[in-house]
Length: 112
Length: 113
Image (cartoon, rainbow over all chains, first blue to last red; front, side):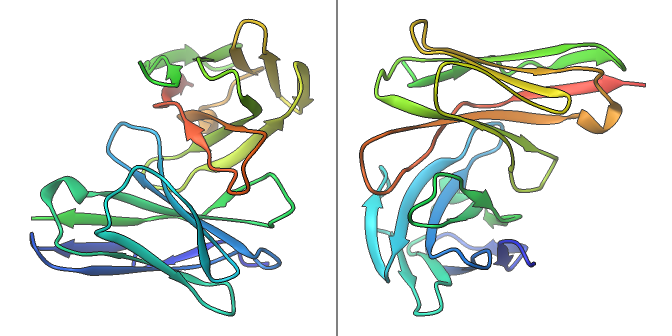
């Protein structure tokens, strides 16, 4: 059983560019959450998708947007990249009626 | 003040030692508590999940929750070098459909052989 997968593993972008990160949830899971983890910090909640809609959003600007597809996979888009967006971006999947969230390996984004 | 406080360490112990990791929180609405282990440059791995106050044991790991003191702990018995990682506490409110997790900043643990 494949766990949560994310792509790409690493990404280097320039300030002002746009980036798209991808996530496939664990088999049987229908809910995807995205988190940002800065170096030396715990993950911060960005938003969660369920039934192809954004269900809840953390304290992140509109430059951060997402999408969920009918197969439950998800994308995170970040526009107008800032140096401060450099972080590990984590995807977590869960079952809507469950409490446990399982994380993928993350995408490390570096903005120069 | 952060909602969840966690001593960042680093914590270094000899192999076989008992390790105690702790978090305090300020939001009394937190009802579900988790511990994740994160190896360098990897995603967090769920170790323990608890709901009520008290203890939950799983192998060498014991999670303890004291809601009256807003304090949670993770104990690791017979620690091994393979336990060397960053340990993150996480918690969430009972209400709300999204079940977003609020994390501590993590404690870096090194178990010396």
